[in-house]
Length: 102
Image (cartoon, rainbow, N blue to C red; front, side):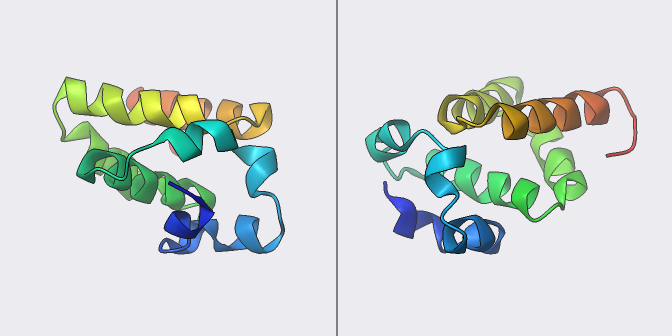
C-alpha cells in the first residue's frame, strides 16, 4: 500500500496535506501491507481516529469477534510510529472498553 490508498478516507486528508504522514506512520510497514478487505477495513476505521469520531467506530469494533478486533488493533499498533498518536489511541480504546466517555 502507499499514501494514495489512504486518501480515500477523509480522516487522513489533513495529515497528508500537512506532510505529517511519515511522522505518524511507519512507511516501511505501510508499504508491506497487502490491500486485503481486512486491511482496508482497519485503515478505514483508523481514519475516524484522526477525524476525532471514534465512538461509533469502537462500537462497531466491539461487535466483531475477538480475533477480528485483535487483528485491527494489532495492525494499528504496527503501523503507527508516533508515540503521541499511539498513546492517545490506546487510551481511547481502553477508556471506551471500561465505559468512560471518549
